Length: 214
Image 1 (tube, rainbow, N blue to C red):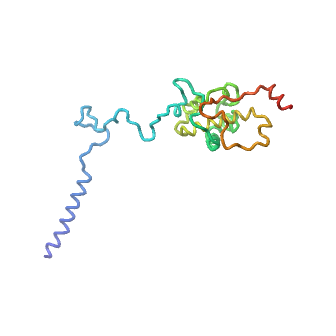
Image 2: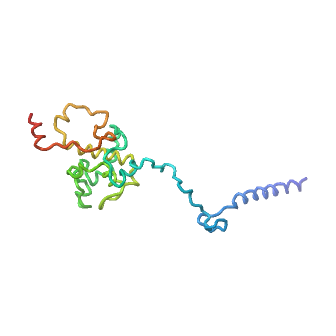
Image 3: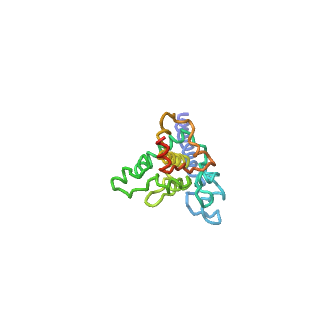
């Protein structure tokens, strides 16, 4: 009996060690290892054709590209709310204001200190008339010395920044009467509604002066 007591623990340890080895040494192939099982000799199999990674379906192409065919679109892909504009302002101040400034005139900290070329003001006529899809595309793909921000800013936030840039542009054409005594609406300006386009209501200086003199 004493001898059996000494042998039993040894047998148990051997049995457990055998199970552990079996778990470690499995019939598998190392990544990128050569395999004789498949005709192309690759152990790692390519994904099935048409496979889409989780969260990367991108069925709404305009939402992700800002383009209709090869041309930039001129409407927001979703109804913009006040919360969207506020989120766009926060993202703009983080990623855009260092160069473009918080008012969008191109006199940001980086440019004004000579660390880069001064970007154009958002308030020039060319950019005020630019389709919203163009602005989205610049954020996504970059332009000139400006790098792309596709990895830093998700698509929805890029559109929110676009909406906020449009709001900045619109603010330059507002009269004192537009700002006096009017509470901030819960909804975004009508020009940001889907399908309405995003062109700014331009006011000629002569017309604006005559309105202000009344």
